[in-house]
Length: 359
Image 1: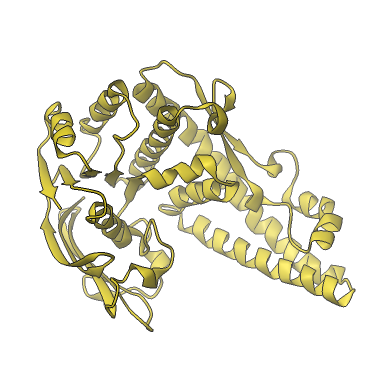
Image 2: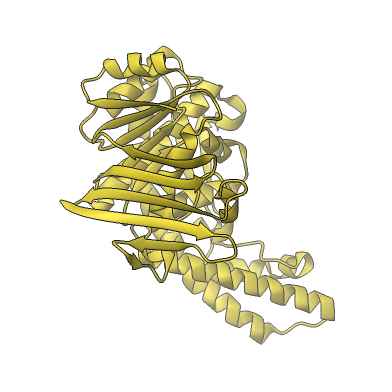
C-alpha cells in the first residue's frame, strides 16, 4: 500500500495544496510553523478520521474558513482507492471511500494501516496511564473489531455506573440489584478486554525488545511490563472489593480502565532516570514494534510517519534508525525535519529512492 497523491483544502494553516508522492521515502523540510507536521497529520486523518494532535475536529479548519477537505489517492492490493474526509462548521464530519459514505467511522479503522512517531509521543512517558492505555487500544483496535466493540461498550457502562454511584450519594440511597446489572456487564466486557491485552503484550513485548536493541546498539537494558489488577483478581471480585470505596468517591476505582504499562531502563522508571535520547529511543522502538505487529496482523505494510525524529538523538542512534528504515520490511515513509541538509545527508546513506518537499 502507498499514498500516491494528497490534496488539502483549508486544513490547519494550509489553504490549498497538492502533492504527488514517491513510493518509498518522502521528506518535508522547512522552518518551524510552515506546515510540515500538518501534512503528516492530514495523512493520519485519512487513516483514523481524526487528528493525531488536536482532538477538537472543528479546530482543524483553517481560521476564517467554513470547512476543510482532505483527499488521498492510494494504491492498495493493486487497486486504486480514493479517500475523502471533510468537515463543515455546524455539520457532521464526512468520510467517503470511492465515493461511498461510511455509516460508522469505526468500520474504517485498520483499512489503511498507519503508524506515526512524533514528539507528542513523549506523553506516553511523562503523562498518566490513560495515554498508555490508549496506545495499547489503538494498536489492537486497528485489526480487532470485536475488541473495539467491547472497549466502547465497557467505557459506556463505566460512565453509566459512575452516574448511578453519584445518584446514590446525592439521594442517600443504594440499590444493589441495579448496580449488579452494570457489574455483570463490566465483568463480561472487562475480562475479554484483559485477555486480548495480555495476549497482545505477550507478542508485542519481544518485538519491542528487539527494536530497542537495534536502536541502542545493544548498549542498554529496558523493560516493558503490563500492569493490571486482573493479574490477581477477577473483574467481578475487583468490583465487590472496591464497592465501599466506589460509593465514597462516587466513581469506579477498579477495573481494566486502570491498566498501565511500566517503562523501565536498567530496572528504574525511564521517566525519572532516562536521558532525553534514551526516552526518545524507547518511544521510537515502541512505535517500530507497533508497525511490525500491525504488519503481521493485517498482512499490509503500514504507512510510516516520522515527525522530527532525528532531534535529540546522537549520530549512532540516528544511524541505527536509518538502517532500520532502509530495511525492505518498511513500505512508504514520510519524514519531516527542519534541517534539509541533515535529512538529505542521512537519506543518502541508504539506497532507497526519496523525494524532498521544501515548504
